[in-house]
Length: 401
Image (cartoon, rainbow, N blue to C red):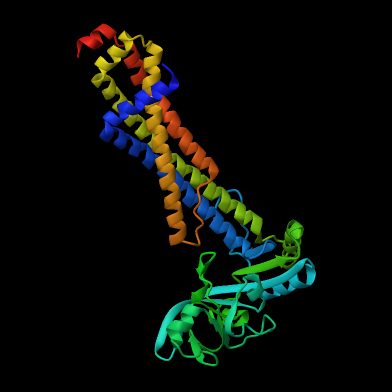
């Protein structure tokens, strides 16, 4: 019996049990679709995070107050971390020549009001340098003026959502708003930017950093964002930043300096593990579908004993019988895999349209693995029924007719 004859025979057998064949095919299709869709989501999340960080540029250092230990033990004794101050920022500006841009951050939540309209909003205290570091566009008016970082000024720049909720269609420029107990004059409105690094940039208010420290009654900065001239200088600049701050803090290295690459690497490892976990969970459904194929083929053997006996009487060898049933299992798994692959890509395309910011596209390894597991399941779970069919005695099989 040639390969073409085996395939033709298997197709006729599958056509004779259409409902059973379709249900088994769907089992494999759903498994492959799950693998493709879930890995597409994981890959999309990785790309989204990468794009978000790369939108800041590729030469970024972030300075955090407090030392992050790598031992995994939480500090039980000792004082609170030393403040990260505007004086520290100025020292870095003077003594680290590799710094191209530097922006302090003081972040908090406050009540924003205009007239009888009030709402809670995220208030960011910074300097004019923040506009370039975060690539913030200004729709109307201007961004924060050039001021010494320790100089207060009652001016504010609004995000688009804040502007709309407080002023409606009115022009906010020159109007006075309340931030907590303090009054600020609106000098600009940011362009709509949406979510960026977990923060909705349309729902923020930006004020000078010294004013923010007064509003929040703080002395320590939340972060320092530093842009370095060249990517190859990041490591050296990081060491210089740590050295300058340690000298200012009585020789104690009590700040954490992270590079953009290290943050991206951490996120990438986490999301890669998540993607593999999702793929593994989805692949379990392929195993379930394989068991379904085995059950279908075992039932098929019991229903087709006379047919098997006739084939053997006509000279078909046990090897031919095994191959016929294996071909049936492979056709089911291959067809199910292709159907699932098409559905997976269609689902990924729909996700891409529904969530343009999340580039959901399955990685090639996941597609190959899904099809490979589907094909392998067809072989593995088709062996037992094929062997049982091959062992049938032709005389006994014909006698059942």
